[in-house]
Image (cartoon, rainbow, N blue to C red; front, side, top):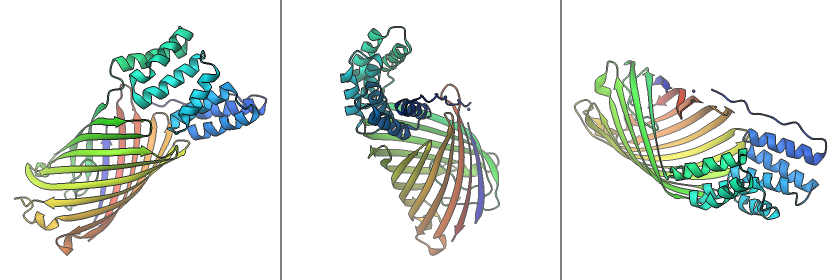
Length: 366
C-alpha cells in the first residue's frame, strides 16, 4: 500500500554576523571563535578559544569566551572554566553576566540573580546590563517556570485517509478515500527536575482531526507522558519516554496503547544534529460499528528511526528522516513491514509562532 501525506501547519530569517580576523594567531583564533559563537557553532568556537589559550595561557578573555561557548553547548566542564575567568577579574561585568546565565540555566532565577545584579552595578546602561535586566525580569515573571504549553493548527491532505495522530501513524488506512481535514494539537509539559545535564518531565498531548467529507473518521487522541533526558557531553544526549495513549474514531473507542521510546541525539555542530530512535508500542484495539474486527489487530509495533536536523538560518530549520516499522498482530494478514520517508521545514514567526510544512511517503508490505 502506497500513500502520500502533505501537511501544512501554522514564519523570517536573520543572517548571522561575522567578525574580521586579527593579525596575530591569538587574535585570529579569538575572531574565528566569536564568529562561530554568533552562528551557534559552539563546539567549533570552543576549539578556537582553546587554540587562543595555547598562544596566551591563562588569558582572561580567551578563558571567558571558552567558558561561555562550553556553557552554551551544555559541556560539563563549563562551570570550572567560567569560575576561573571570574576569579581572574571578579569586577568584569561580562564574567558576572555569564556566571549568572550559567547558574540561571542550571538552577533557576535565584541562583543567577546575584551575578545579574552585580553586572548592572558594574556596567550600568550598557548592553550587558540590559541583558542582565532581561534575565531578572524573566525570573520575576516566571521565565524560569517549569511548565510550558503550545498549540498547533493546520490543514492536512491524505491520499488514503490514514488515521494520523500526534507522533506517528495508527495502522489503519481507508484505501482510495482521499480527503482534506483540519488538525489541532495541544501540548503541555511540566518539568519535575531540571539541572545542567539532566531533566525529568511529565506531559499531556491532545490531538483532534476534523475531515471535510469523511467525518466518521475523525480522530481524537489523548496522550499522557513521562520522560527523562541526560546530556552525556557536548556531542551526545540520551532521552527516554513512556506514553499512555487512548484514541477515539468517530466518537467510538478505537485503541489503547503503551509506548516506550529511547533515543540518542548527536550534535555535529554547524547547525547539524542527528536523532537515532527506537520505539516499542503495545496496542489494544476495540471493536466498533465502523471497525467490527478491530481487536484482531491488537499486538506490538517496533520502530527504528534516523532523522537529520539542519538549521539553515536562525529561524529556518529542515528535518529529513527515515522510519522502519515492524507490526506484529493477532492475525497474520495484519502483520506488515513498512518504510517511511519524511521532510519537514519549520520557519519561526514573530510572537513565538511558527510555520511548518511537511510531507511524508510510506510503503507497507503486509
